[in-house]
Length: 263
Image (cartoon, rainbow, N blue to C red; front, top):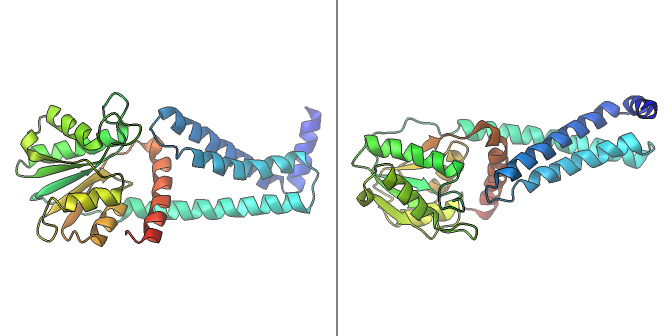
């Protein structure tokens, strides 16, 4: 114990505060990633949290255990700089994502495009999709002239298409099946909107895009890029614990869509 105490004291004198901060942040990321993995959402994105953890933990632990030298010092400084820049950029973009394009939803929408998300092994909507469906149901119940387009194909780990799951849920929730159109081929947000736009008049119809609050900004940008002229985002609830994971994923998705020219 005394040996570890001496090591920590020496490390503190040679940049240990930085090393300890890296270890604490890395451990927190690893633990958070594990909680996301245990949800069994069907996505492997939780692995990103382990990558972040490794970037922080390796140089941090090396600073505690290895003799101080130029390589250890540079690794610690580089990891700290990368972490700070990454966190600041992610927080800034996430704040923008959660506050941009928030306007009041009109009462005279012709269609709701309900964007798909993970379906569980038993054919029921996972939590993210359930929140979208609850939001869509509330609007459809209050606006009987509005129709819904359930958007989403069938993933490799899904027993049915997302569109079929969504349509069944809405019918069970009291929405007339005649008001529900299924778009069951899409596998991405861009495809959701592209395929759904072929089922409406994109230049005339007033369309609400129902998705979770962290996803509204990107969905609206893609819709505008595809020529949907009259669109409004309708944000659904997101569980706060999962929001960091969802926002980080959105940051990467925005970068991807921007590079691909789809938004």
